Structure formats: C-alpha cells, structure tokens
Amino acid sequence: MLDLLRRFEPGLAGQLKTLEVTPAAPIPPLVASAQADRHECAYVRAALLTLHEGATGSALLSMLGLARFAPVQPPDYAVLPELAREADQAGFALTDAGPGTAKHNN
Image 1: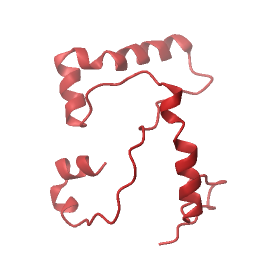
Image 2 (image 1 turned 180 degrees about the vertical axis):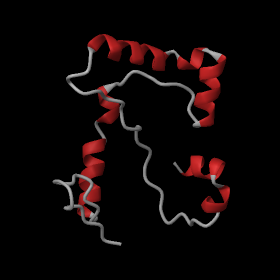
Image 3 (image 1 turned 90 degrees about the horizontal axis):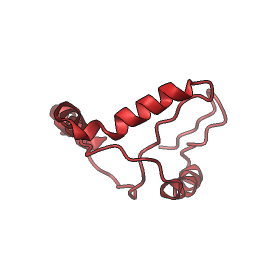
Image 4 (image 1 turned 90 degrees about the vertical axis):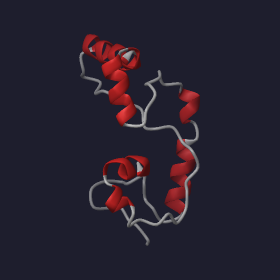
C-alpha cells in the first residue's frame, strides 16, 4: 500500500513516518458470493491468472506493483488468524463483531 502511495501520491507519502513494519503476509484472496455464477467466476479467474501473459495486462499489473495473480494455496493463509488475534490483543479489533463495534486504541 505504501509503495502505491509513494508512486501515485509522493507528496502525501512524504508526510508519513513509518512507526513499525508488520510481518509479510499474503494479500487478501479475491472471493465471490456463493450465489455468483460458477461459469462467470471461472472466466474471471482464468482472466486474472493469465493477465501477466499479455503486454497490456502486464503493464496494468506493473502499475500496481504486481507481477501476476496466483491460485490460492490455503497454507499460505494459515498465518492470518494468528495475526488477527495479535491485532485484537493489541487493541485493534480486526475481527469486528459488527457495525459500530470496532475499537482502536491509538
């Protein structure tokens, strides 16, 4: 996220100060509703997984600082529940119980 901000809003990024860095973690997976059409989902999935193969898609990905999309591997996401628990314990309620219930201790 900070890399994108530096690329597209360098003035704003220059006003920020890094206080701490979080450990590397996978980006959130792209998901669809259970009611979504399976064929449309397969079409979108195939398009994203091959986006890097064409010049236009590769350029778009590069603008976002991405090399390509990859199929989800569930073990890659095994770290997320622990990171969420740590955030909750630190006072950042990432596992919000609903609208208006998030708490942030700054």
